[in-house]
Image (cartoon, rainbow, N blue to C red; front, side):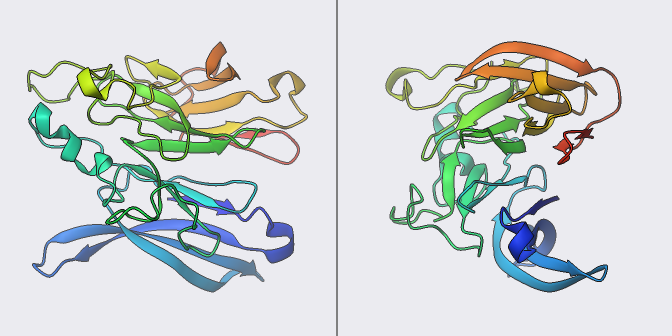
Length: 278
């Protein structure tokens, strides 16, 4: 579902893959598991494969990866739409539960271990890889030039988001969202927390309604298009557009459509020469 190279690839040659597969539990019910592997390519073949870690997932949407400059690996996991849950029970769903890996941004070492400085590693019962929670469907992860982590997220019917991801922060799903349910349940969007939950959740830096169905993101640092330096490039699936976004801190100051109606853009990468690959 994603492939990234080690920040020290020139010296160690490691390539990281995330895959998903089905397993049957003790009752014979099918469940899904994600696996983080790394290996090297030698003489055209994949060699020295290592399984670094495995964890339960709800669906195979998401599972994007990104490395920071210190060789910590971040992985996004999804929990798109719960079956109808009473509003008072939404806080007990997996994205809001620290014990579940679903609906999270996870953080691990390059060897697949839980770092000692993860925000919930010492919280009893918490899944130790959890870095941020309240995530719906993370379709892109990328670090900017300052080492800050950003995430593109598909909302339900409306409510696609660009989020600035910070350690230990809660992004609200499914308690708050600018989108609506897909089914006919008479439940309005709840974009703002109320009562005791005011200030508990981070709002998106940008939200889109209707949804373009956001996909992968990357920050442009190439030389082929110097005016794009530090711009966020973002693909979309349903809208089939490539966007360029200029950020000033957590404030978007430019939003431009570079390509329109091209096709469903699944991934966006920049080559060492500064060319953009879709």
